[in-house]
Structure formats: structure tokens, C-alpha cells
Length: 334
Image 1: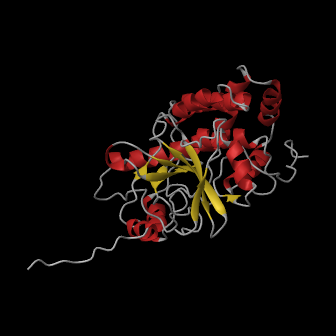
Image 2: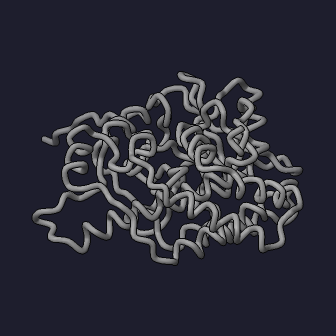
Image 3: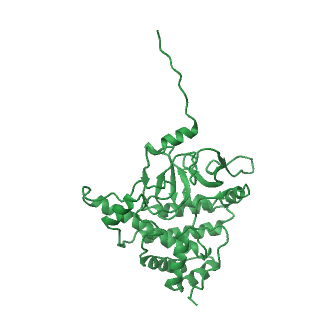
């Protein structure tokens, strides 16, 4: 007598929920982060309506890469601070709580000096000159507004330049904190990065993702990672699951359509009917060169079209602040 049984297939929602806590690998920012972004932006700029701006951000990424290659020792959290963050389920380098080292302003002024010496549009050159003359109080106010996700008072025009310096600074922090752990005595040193209570924000700095990326290769093939808008860290997040409310129902995907009525498979907007938010997904299996921030920036049209459906953007790209901000304070402090 042969025994038989009924096999029940799980729904996509059950798969997502059950897969959630099993693994949350991190991909910390690599030395070539900004160089890869530069190359992708240059590639996307060809024939693009935003060509000049994409090339400007590519030039900014080039200088970020060059600065990152230069050694600069930073003040890092001690064991007590790391332990407190771990116990509280918080990121150890929380962008809004971590005491900002004034050295980030030196990075900004170095970037501005490098840009001023290159071939950039005249409007950008004027902005670079004005920002280079801004006082410390103004720069700190702009940094706080940007790290809060675009708070009132943020100047959208200056935001990309402020963001470039902050990205460089936080990328250094993550890399140096991880290096200290790897070079130390693991029996006495806490691993600085891991799971935190909120899986929708970066486990290193607590910032919102700019987009998500489905990866290829080895054990990470097909997995989705959220990409941090600040430090460049990527962390695993279940597919077909809202990155805002964490729901698994009412998920749909929107994409741009070309002249031949063919939908783009490289970049899609994952929309959640439950909370009315969306986040873009870029797919390495469709284009190995995708880079979350660059591809998000180059698909502004998708944001506009999805916005017409009444869905609100969840991702944050500091290189292009959508919407109008309040008038910024006078850079000179007057």
C-alpha cells in the first residue's frame, strides 16, 4: 500500500514572510563604489534628455572616488557605543544621531575645489563658487536637513554637493569601522554591523534606500538588496515585499515603455497598494552594469508617471531632490 499526501503550495505572501528572517547578508561599500557609479552615469548619459546633469553627477562621482583613495583617519564609535546600538537594535552610525565630525566640511570644500578646476556647466560653476564661500553654520544646517531626508530649509540646488561630501564621509566611516573589526581580536571586539530592528533602513547608517537591486552570481543570485542612499551599503530584503509598510499584498510593478511598446526590464517601480508607496528595482540579470543611484537618477520619467497614479516615492536620491523645499537661509549667515 502506497501512502499519499497532499502538498500545499505556499502563496507568494507566505514565501515572503517565511523567507524574511532567514538571512540578511550585508554588502558593505567597496573601494570602487564611486568609480562604478561614474561609469554607469556616463553610459546612461548618451542620448539622454538629462545628459548634462548626468555627466555633472558623474564628474562629482569621479572626484568622490579620488578622495576616497586618499587616507583620512576618522573618529569611530567605541565598544560601549557599539554595544548600546546593538542592544537597542539601532545602526551604529545613525546619520541623524551620530555626532558629525567637522571633517566632512573639509571633504566638501576639497570636492568643490576639484569641480571648480574642471569643465562643468556655468550654472554649476556659479553654485560651486557660492557654496565654497558659505559659512560652517549654513553647511551644517544643510547637512542636517539632507540627512533628515530632505527636511524644510534644504536647498535642492546645493543638495547634490552637500550629499557628495556626506556620502564620502559615511562611506569612510563604514569602511574604517569594519576594517578595525577585521584587524582586531574578534574574541573581544563586537562586529559593528548586523541586523537592526527596522529592516527598511540601512543597518549601518539608518538612511533610506535609493532603490533596490536584484543581484546575480553565486549564493546571492536572484536575491534583492536595498541600496543605501548615503553610505552605499546594500542589505538583503525579501522580494515582492513593500519596503515601506513591509506588506506583501497588493504589490504591482510599473515600467517605462519604449517606442515599440516594449516594457523596460532593467528598471521597474515596485508599488504597494496598501500604503501607496513605491521603490524602484534595478535588475542585474537584465543589465550587469546597473548601479542603483545612477539608474534611479536616469529614470526620472518613471517617477513622474508613477506619481500620476497617486503613488508616493519611498526611495531617497540626494542627487535630485523631488518637490520644492523651503527657501534656504542665506549662505553668508546674514
